[in-house]
Length: 204
Image (cartoon, rainbow, N blue to C red):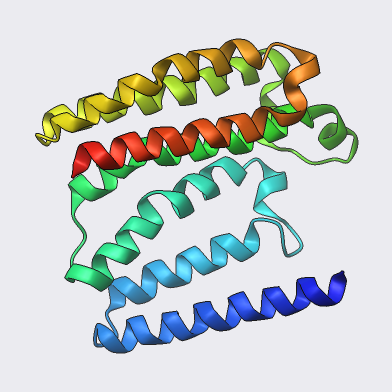
């Protein structure tokens, strides 16, 4: 119900504000922490809210990439160790690319509905054919970057992500079947979890 939704929303907002204030106090009001926390909050709210939601201006993918990748890692790194490590940003970027693929799978499925509603998602801007190439490119980039970054930074365990490659290839074939599009985003999310676990185990 709407009441439950509002209650949960208020609870999440309260939790975030409490953590936000704590992180500032704990880091002696670090400008880096303040900057990333503010940026992340504005992007999260602006994704679907306000007079010009980012998602419907073709900026949804970039917003998700920042919020689930460099943004959250930079903020967490600044809070926990007081500095932002470049290797942390790069090594977690592959999983963020997979998250963007989840969003794109959803937007590709709803491309006609969004187009009729005037929403300019990346899928709408690219069109059906280019959207398929983009989706496959996101998955390929995630796998390639995981291996390259692992090699550069000596985290050779990142090779474990190769075991998820067959599932990623299956997704690339699956998205062409219209009767399976309904849950393509869900299947992509499941594979993203497998990819993230393999990547995390490789970093240990």
